[in-house]
Length: 247
Image 1: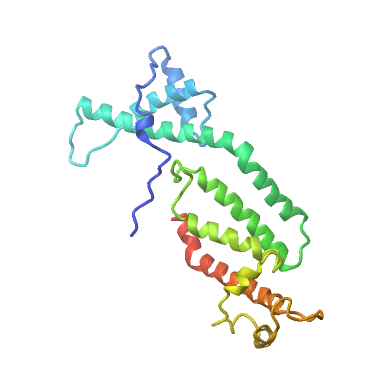
Image 2: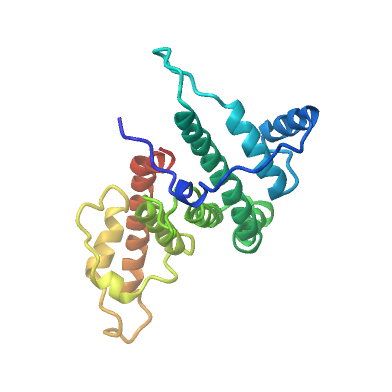
């Protein structure tokens, strides 16, 4: 089994400063603060409250030893700092993420919602436009998630970026496919996704500019084949790689 991905956003070295002083709090205040901080999401109203909660939680969250070992004070202090660093990483990551989300992720979510609400309920191109908008939201989200590094990389960039790139062409059918792409296209092993008549028409068609009349040329037929090849690759990635995005 693969090891779990490291949560690179929780760099404990950034959050190992001393615990807050809670000696001025009454026992009732401590219990109320501990309870509110245990909720999901936490019912804490400031960073100061959070830091006080971390102190209480680190003391409350005691570790047990299966061999009956009673931890030394040094071991106990180490355990408390591990707990505090982890909780601080989560708290401050969420604060940064929520600020970033308002400016950068929310517009993509609004675009996705607009597609879902207002696109006509027919035609495959509208469905691809919806998937394109959703994957762009996912790409932005993961780039600022706990698994992303300082450069926004998160391990499966290649596959999600490839899907977004493919959908950019697929959703508009063959509108933006260039002649250079068609010139490099391999037409072997495409009999299962396009009819033989389209392949024959492509092979027999003149090159662009070779005919003076308005008959379809090789670029016209080639684009229709190329977009189908893109669709096949897109679905192969979804079939074999999409589940890995969540592992």
